[in-house]
Length: 409
Image (tube, rainbow, N blue to C red; front, side):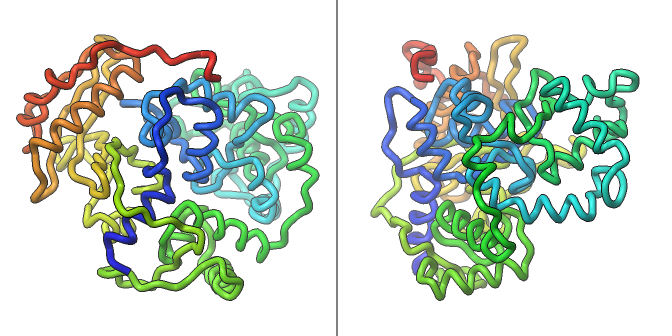
């Protein structure tokens, strides 16, 4: 398979070839969620939180209340779990995660603070059942969650709640305004049909997850399929073998890739891709960095935790996808106090048409700014693409700022 064919197949599987809708509705959102399969959750809010951005990349400006409705209201479509890492996943994958939950229930987890079942677990279950959905702070008012050490110095209550969340004995009803998990009993969060679905044994669960990963990936190596839901090597290898035997996957050699790949038999390969999209660092298209290099020849590292003087491209850098290539990267910050979207740096990939790239990127930056409720776009003079981008920004100013339509929810 030619590398360009693999790229188009992957981009179509991820939803970048779907027709644009003038009004983003829940049906449109459902289509995009079916493509991505999961939405990684991350607390960094320099531009916008990670789980909102992949939908913007595929749908353009949309009302984020749609995502809240899908994840928090009946009929609930999404639920948070440790699926990729912390992520929203379709509720129908809950039964496929039960074997994972059982493993946490039996052995505990390093983040829950101790091996096995925490002493507080049963008491917390009783308290949540009695009072309803609650955060760790609300369940532990005496100490709360200490704020030092990047917020990871958890109280014993928080540790036990995380154990109950990982083991499936509690579910996440929502995130509050402080981005804290609000825990509740699964029967008050998930649809009854999901809770009543029969358990899948470990091999069945592995096949389900690899199949879903393959549908969202289009073409992927075994390692990439494993990474999508953070599975074990042995269970992934067995599931891939069985899906090949079943006829759901076909082995393919992709030009330039060192490892054997697998194509989902229903994957479409359009003749061309026409898209322009800013990509979150946690977008499923680029979250596995080795796959990003295989697909696009694009070396990407997130530099949030790198000291400022050692950063190459910036703090919160988003790749820019134009048609079937990643052509640039831009370091973005939403300066909400002044109403500006700041492009702190902009860099072009070698050999691109900088004029075309700058014009398309300027349009996407204005779309992002108005989606975020910001009035201005400012390009700072850092990076080889910054001069062309700054020159393109005035011509790309939108005629009007559209307001998301609440009736679409």
